[in-house]
Image 1 (cartoon, helix red, strand yellow):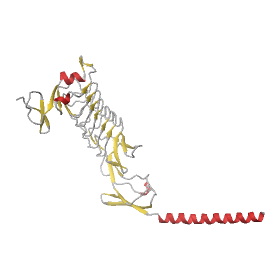
Image 2 (cartoon, one colour; image 1 turned 180 degrees about the vertical axis):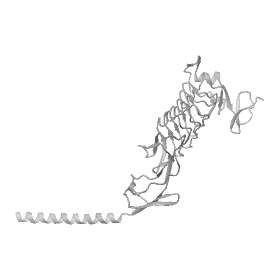
Image 3 (tube, one colour; image 1 turned 120 degrees about the vertical axis):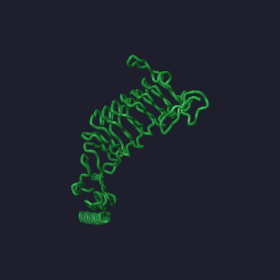
Image 4 (cartoon, one colour; image 1 turned 30 degrees about the horizontal axis):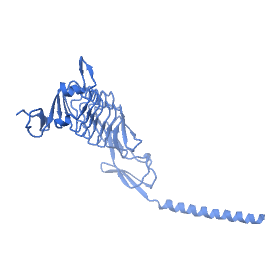
Length: 328
């Protein structure tokens, strides 16, 4: 009986060894069959490095020389994520941005977020891409209280700007938003006393609360597509505003007492359907509400592309600027 068991054990052991041998040979063949890819790092048409790795492996950043600095006050890096495995052959170029900008990867889509700025440059340049991914948002309070910056170049890929992102940037003179922006957070540009003009992104649908509170420009236009103006959105010095025909509601003190002229882009009957808050507020001895501004304090003009045939307050565009139709 013991002899039989011994023979069975030896046979089983041999079988296991054979299976393991085949497995090892198979693994070796698979590893050998893996393709290799070459990543070329080039700057200004000059190849700085060519690294070949097996598919799925990573490139050691220490094996690639840093690119040459392209401009004073700027950081120049490879637009490449060394933390990701290589899956194709490609050529990598550089990306430059203002020194002092910091970034973090979004947990949702893998895009990058501008998280802050510690630099000294008055003009801030943000890149469209960082480590191969779009720069899609600016974190809340990222530039809050910065008294140095005068201008900002936003990424073409920018989608959202967080709450208070540029609050109290008192020397910021103007901003130009890319078309991709759909969200401006609450108080994003409040207390920016140096803003001489402000043009909203054309694809937003809500004007957030206090977004330009305390700013000093006289004129502001809300783009078509916006359906709501949130509380204190225009608590600023603006005296003239263009409101879109798409507007459906104006919340508590969404219109401020300084307004004297409202250009509404729809017809008078549509204006009557807009819900306007009547919550009162007293400021400097004046009591008002968004409703009283819209119905008593300011003059409302209704859009008419051609000269109106009936009496009333009407306006149209002349060379891109609002103009009042003269009464016949």
